[in-house]
Length: 382
Image 1 (spheres, rainbow, N blue to C red):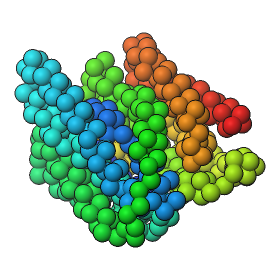
Image 2 (cartoon, rainbow, N blue to C red):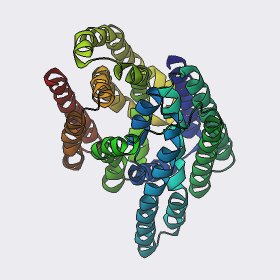
Image 3 (cartoon, helix red, strand yellow):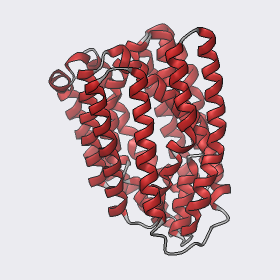
Image 4 (cartoon, rainbow, N blue to C red):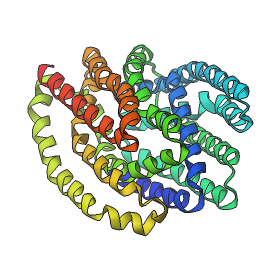
């Protein structure tokens, strides 16, 4: 898993360098806006089914991958219908470019994220070597196609079309490859119902997380979306280096008692901070030089990025959320997923209105601290 995340982080860095140096800020900001809207619409594809599928496969129900895919696609049609309403809105506004772009979103939405069930399958099998290989290959193919595209053209329509087509095709290929390797066709009747619980509980978090670019777009403009995106990217990748290993624990947690987990998990998290704190301090010191070297067009992002790096400190606490999912603690999942995100969207609007782009940082840090406090409380009371 660590090798996978290092590989994907390197690919992501290469992509970021290409975007920063080959696309105008306004174009990249518009691209990020479209992607954020598509992720909001993709909530309808029930991404929590992946978590449920991992649990089911870990218990030997490998055939659950089929109903998982079908259910995600069916629910994704709702997202496509919502995308058509956005098309209608921009048609009324007279913005033909966004009309055509959101038509693309409507077509690909049920498929783009749904094929990712293959990743949940390999996590459940605890074949993290195959999971890492497939994930890196997929990201590498998509990245190469996108870099060639932006090298040849900075047209937003072409960029969005290539992104959706390449991601859907690549993930579909690896799904088919995975489907051919099932060792049994047993299906867990709990996969879909529990997956819906996880999806519904995490919907508000997804809305809050992806609403950031939408709020910035409407209040500050596309260039500010781009500035924030590059401020966010390095801390986000550092955070993922730690949190991407957490899915390894999910199948293992399903086989442990609540008492055993509570006894051993907190000391392990404490040890993680011996790595995380030096990483945060190092980034605070090196960020100006890093941006000057690889993102010279986004030097104004440095200040915001340094503040955002503080969010890395709460990363290990998300492991408590993995415990709730592994043990099927539906009540804790809902509380943990709803309260903090419920505050983020109004906090974003309020603080951005008064403090501009720095208001986004305030909203994020405050709500993440609240969320971390809630998670710790729920784990101790579990």
